[in-house]
Length: 159
Image (tube, rainbow, N blue to C red; front, side):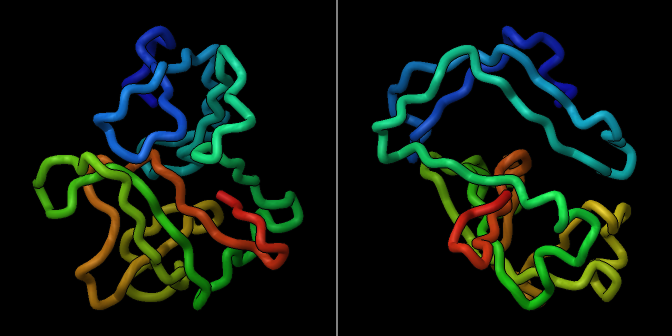
């Protein structure tokens, strides 16, 4: 979020699949960065952006996603052995150019206390470790900031 010190620099595009689509950008009204955000260890690397205008309710390309319930915070959630979906316009090869079409990948949730997660996870109370142990498919550069989504027991998507 350090890249957006001036809220006027931020435009939000909703409901696009291809980066070449022409849609009217929505301005951001405010950005609320988590009060315990720590850039050194990537703790609480999350922000809420309040839009200056309401998103259209009748656009099938725009959906909702929930935050997990408060009683799941601090627990082993999502559980290891479950899966999550990451989406983004990141590059499809290391060092490559960002994709022009929205990509998605299904990633297994891994235990943060076991290898290889215990090497990379610096804040286990608030970070999730997900990925293929065999490699080959994952998120990449320019995917950061995109959602990691989990379907809960009620078939609702949570971020």
